[in-house]
Image 1 (cartoon, rainbow, N blue to C red):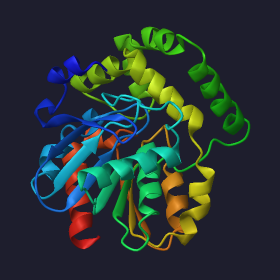
Image 2: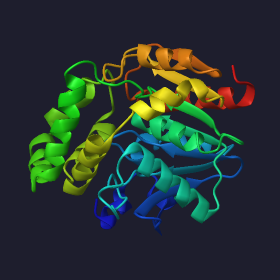
Image 3: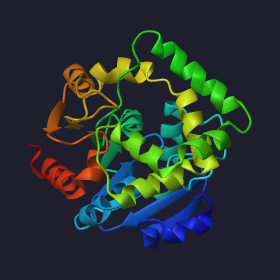
Length: 286
């Protein structure tokens, strides 16, 4: 996304650019108190937390960022869009800026990034909260075909331009969001339309898909003793609700909280409800 477009982006007054490490980052920051880091899922941006940030900022120092190549974060290295490099680079950004998140909230694939970051701080792990955490691999042939397809698409010139042009039609965006099990407002739909219409954002998302490797993280879950809370939308059609349950069952200190009626974008459907639950979890863990 061109930086000039930030003026009409949600919470633009909180936005700033940070040079390095590796990428040119878009960050939004608000509030005081314990540091809470927000990570969006693949294909998203800080906009997905637009209504949660003001609520959480009443009690926390909230930092939200766009993942490499997505939203307004400019890629500095195309080969650093996979899970481990992304977690490493965000950790380095936190170190550079003097942030030490005590809580990391990750939506979908952002939860995997949050856990990868947390595993590097085993002596003082942050509390991790996953919203419809994408911690499962595609079964069978799809697990082989989808990554290969994403790599092929990411390597072909103009693929991102063709995809963004074909997919940014408002009706297609509405159908895409509906397929996740979520029902968003016209404002929310238009923000995704703007993202999908941007060639650089689509390219960054494709690179993330093509470089994504979950298996090492999944194998490490039983050995991770930090506290993890999984918030699950029971209507999620993108990541089956049992994915979070199965992940929690592998971990020593994990729990699952089901949210009726909500889909994959639960935090955008009911931001105040999700923010209130997060605050309760951080207050009493129940």
